[in-house]
Amino acid sequence: MQKTISIIVPIHNEEKNIPLINEELLHVFSFLPYDYEIIYVNDGSKDGSQQIIEGLLKTDDKIKCIEFSRNFGKESATSAGLQYSTGDAVIVIDADLQHPTSLIAKFIERWEGGVDVVIGLRTKTKGALGLKFLCSFFYYKVINTISETPIVSGATDFRLIDRSVVNEFDKFTEHERITRGLIDWLGFKREFVEFEANERVNGVASYSYIKLVKLALSSFVSHSLFPLKFAGYLGIFIVFVSGFGGLVVFTERYIYDDMLHWAISGTAQLALLMIFFIGIVLSCLGLIALYVGNISHEVSGRPLYVVRSVGNLEKK
Ligand code: UDP
Ligand code: MG
Image 1 (cartoon, helix red, strand yellow):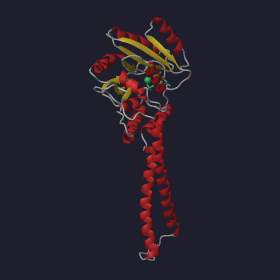
Image 2: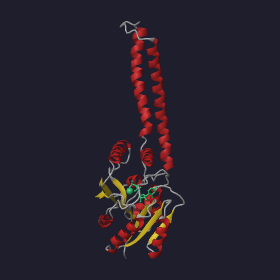
Image 3: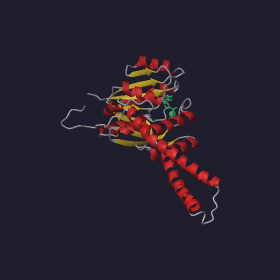
């Protein structure tokens, strides 16, 4: 029996791009020995995207659509697509033709070779803004220093995901989510395929700088406790430094009666004392961070472990 590939296309104001991507996808599959379904997830578009999709639905019952009641963001759109998909493998692709459809055959080939997640690795974006590139460079530097699961720089949402991974992904309940981060967290056998991203064909990128900063912050918070613990580390550092300084100063001044003639003023002594107590407050914040971290870990409800395969057992 032919295997089925599900293609998920998140849509936000892409009326001009939908016919183009649709044509490209159909073209790709006309050469592939696979059954397919194309799921357009209309993430609250305000333009004519829905009408265009509905027009396509009539032409082919392999074309499917999910319409959101409002804009929920690409991460939610992708999650919905994954949940509704039925294929043996799922491919997520942007509607703006930045992700070359010519790579789909290569993705499938790798997947047939036993890889569970084939990830499109962006080497360069044609016509990309310098600032966006710089920001993304620093973002990956920071997240990889502080995050528990490393995120490969340039790894995109353009990827093929095996059904077994999709099933595990569907179990996630957390709301603040970066889809690709969660898929990376799941592990499994992963491989990268490099590509050069094209320029967006029509329309403008929906991700403004503010949205990107929000996304970056949310990924810091959901993948790492470092921002929280940082206050604690800072506090411990301050306590030690000011504590040591204080000890030296007070010994010299009061036990040896200013033997070294440092003549440290009362204001300076008071300042030292205050810095010491600020350090203690910050350390306590760090301590609270440990508890908050524990709570956030528990409420995110991630699975304890993820099983790739079992032998002589039934997978639970
Ligand atoms: N998108 C979406 N919801 C949003 C923003 C974007 O579904 O709130 C879709 C958009 O239609 C496109 C993909 O996500 O198919 C990538 O969006 P965009 O090109 O704006 O982002 P970038 O290329 O800058 O990552
Ligand atoms: Mg784009």
